[in-house]
Amino acid sequence: MLKVKEYKMLVAIFLALSFNPSFSQSKLSNKAEISLLTCSPGEELYSLFGHSAVRVSDPAQRLDVVFNYGTFSFDEDFYFNFTMGRLNYALSVSEMPNFIREYQYEGRGIEEQILDLDSAQKQAVFNFLVWNARPENREYLYDFFYDNCSSRIRDVLDSTLSSGNPSFPDLRRESDPSFRNLIDEYLIYHPWGDFGIDLGLGLPCDKVVASAEYMFLPDQLMLGFEGATLDGHPLVKAERTLLPAQVLNYAWSIFQPIPLFWIVAAVLLAFSFLGRRRQKLWRWIDVLYFIMTGAVGALIFFLWFISDHNATDYNFNMLWACPTHLLFIAFLWLDKVRRTYWLVYGSILILTLLTFPILPQAMHLAVIPLIILGIFRAFINWRYVPASQQPS
Image (spheres, rainbow, N blue to C red):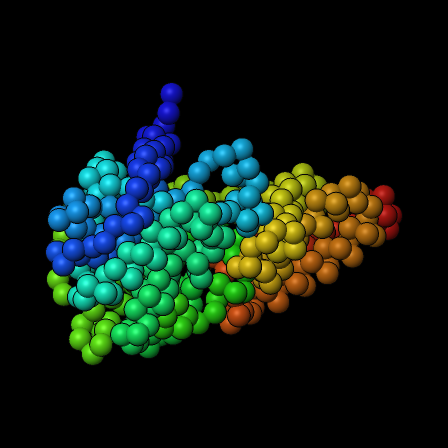
């Protein structure tokens, strides 16, 4: 039986692919309108950042369609391509009533900004979108920050209306946020998604965002259109709410990453103190720690060095999540090698903890208890001398 979120995804894909454009030669009338649709964030991680699309309506032609750059399909290679950073998205076309029903079903809002374009400009935008929706043209290599459903719309308008000298406002903030800062504003509603994204994304995500780059987020694209001008006049001539937005609620839980990892670290630290008092090393704690952090490190290594994702490069999380831990488990019973490895690793952890606030990459706060646990285990391993080697 399908889960609710899986059903929502299938409905969205079906509605997006169910309409085949047959208007390639249509000439828009003077009653036509082109508008930006901005969909509010949803509760699921895949919908948490909202969505953008372009609506073309022409009552004289009985035309009311939505061009959507956020379509992808679940084929047999989906998960492989997603993991490797080679996921193709496509421009699809659906009828406006279907688009409304999809977001109404999900309880998400839709804001519409009607653009103030003359007949030639409307036709130019429409012709490009129709051309771009052809099977041979519609696919593009998705990039969350630089080439997605929102940034594509910005680029389409910027290029097709270039003769009108379109100008977008300066969206930069005084705090000079990074890409990571901007997406964190949405991820507060999905703590585990926030943790996973912070683990996977490396230093490129901490780049200070330029004004035009803000518009990779649908809300920022809407804000950019609101303040944009074309031929010296406002780009947007009217705004209206098509569907009211739901309010996302934040609910604290002990099972969120930060409290959960503090609890886990506290339990293992307590066992470590007890073992030290009994002059026991209790290597099972080290095995558990190395499996957990080593698996994370192996994933980071894969995303950085093997996949085609650009935002996962130069990941400082590998300072504490070392993939070599998985290989070193077998050497925990070789005392000289064990002590040397833990000494080096513990020193790196101490430096990481001391420089945590000033590292060029912002790491998730949930990793701090794991770092502290690793430092204490390094101290115990460095000081521990087996009974057989102790002086009699």
